Length: 105
Length: 476
Image (cartoon, rainbow over all chains, first blue to last red; front, side):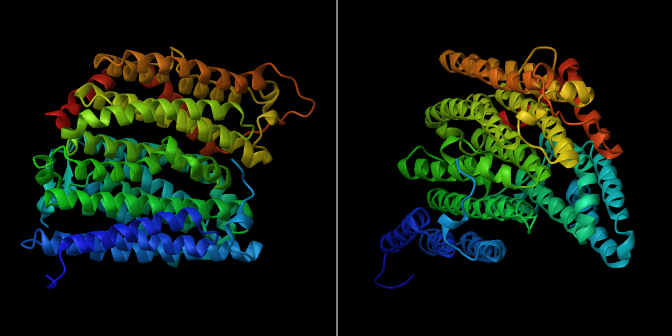
């Protein structure tokens, strides 16, 4: 528990983080920025798990363990996404979303 | 971890052993003999598929994190058979294209790790195992989609896939965290009694559902599908459309019928809307596609809409029909993708107009394609008819007559565009038809296996009874 901060403030923080992530994913024009938005989403959930565990169900450590796994998986996912983006950059010399698109709906 | 748990986890352990053996093989087999890696991998996976058919009893391990029962075991076998046929079909492609660049073993390793993730995902007993399985099944496929590193279209598909998958897992994870907030546990067995129909739970389950809907490519979440299928190598597109989609449907069904059962009255409306939208948009967009891979992508979106008809019921009949339909769908779609792959491998042609006059030059391939398309459309003697018929029965048994009517309308639309291809192959003439060619032995074996599967599933009814009997597990 953090003194002076209730669970509502932290839930507000994680919800704002989550929706910043969604907003960024939709509006950003740069592939790296889109990747950062996804990181925000995953980290919002990780914070959520720790906080719920700490404030609401402190007798078991399920949430904390879950957040550790989220961090590991997020790292793997970012590494793979950056690798794919670098491979694309070698071919078109750009990471802008509008330059990548040759397949249209 | 005693001997009993090893026996219960033998599918996973065996697949892991194959992965390690392939690493050892990659190190010790000299470069000029690397072609034999393909035979080795096929042999090992074939044995794995055979061994999988021995029965397994119901049990749970690791304090409930991992569970297994006859239905889950059956579904793992279905996935095994699907992957084995797919490997047979793509063995020539791997030998010709990948082994030359010294990348053949990586292909098998990525595909098997993805399959391992699916095993863990469908036998997960808590959300942690489920999440790790989901990611393990998605990330290797992203690497496989971007496999042809020299092709721009493949990289673009890879970027689209990994970013969409990341968003989906992020949204899904936020839903799981809210579900954890309302129930205080991540174990399915503990959650089952605690899910109440309040607003936070509904929000949580909708966020969670949208993450899985990305994998199944239901309609508001389907935008990545066609682009990724077009850009990816054909065997990977085939893998995405059958194996990956099938396992996601299965785990979604288990979760909806057990953990989220108290919310069924809300699910019904959501799934009703999504099913109608998925069927109509998938079918109508499929009509205007000329590339065969994009066409099959939209056709697989439409098929996902039909699967939802079984999910809407929440009964034993629903479970049995969904599993049976996925089984039928795996064989039919693998046959269609197999023919597209055989032709693309030989000539590089993927357009619908290139198929004009195919029957005159390659009658066998045309017949297999026709059988696959009839099965996808649901024409009586073949398996697809029974799959769709049972799904409609399941939906009608709960009184969704209008939904069944809309589905029948969609079957008619889909029949139109499936027959467009049959017309191109059989009736239309072409000045430059695809010349006659004879596929290699593995490709032929793969295609024959799919044909046998389609015919056998349509004619051999005790299989459905067996699936129905073991489906009771999730509907007690």
